[in-house]
Image 1 (tube, rainbow, N blue to C red):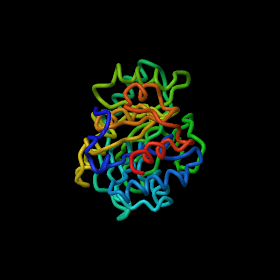
Image 2: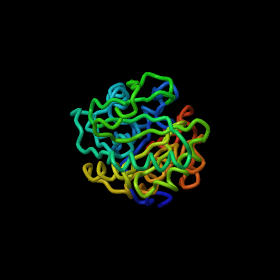
Image 3: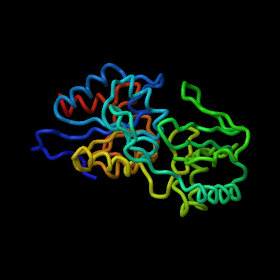
Image 4: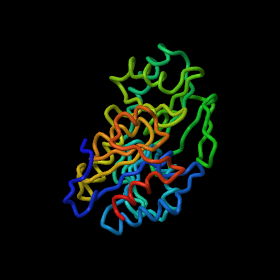
Length: 274
């Protein structure tokens, strides 16, 4: 990973990729005026801004609408490339439900019963939540189901796991040990451990979106806060972790900025594009 853009470049980076939760968004799901202004300055200089989030499209659209965002967004941990202006999916990758079921069996044999949720594919795909799964407080819609079998009734982007006692990192590591050859396992946030199609990451979706925009990895600066941002940092020329990011992400970041509450993205963009 390059530590910086070439000094002779008239534009530091042509693509600014930002995670949402814990990165672009503050805790109240808003973006500060300072960060909005810094992004506007970067785009006025000729850079493109792209949102890259673990949220599937139905949990992302209201944020994009509030920002008057009209470009491409990478959603669902890289599974979906969404055109916000046209309100349509350009690409969508689904989880092999048979492999996911086998992976779950192996994981539960190792760590005991799990609480489950699942994100259905599509622009209006529901997030189904089984009894015992703790949904984070906030406005994100979800559909409680009593029968775990309902999770598998339609195509899925991902399955969410929670364990009664294991923390996120321990659960993810146990899942990778016994099922990492069947599915991808990602820590995407507090109490958010996900099973994904094998090999799928934010870098997958970001590379597809960047190709559509005519830019490359060497043109890209990326901002994030969680281990699911590690592949994106590996792909981009420069990775910037937020001050309160997960230690695994900080370990591979090229730079650490202020927190999302303290305009960490703006701090870096103002330096680069002012």
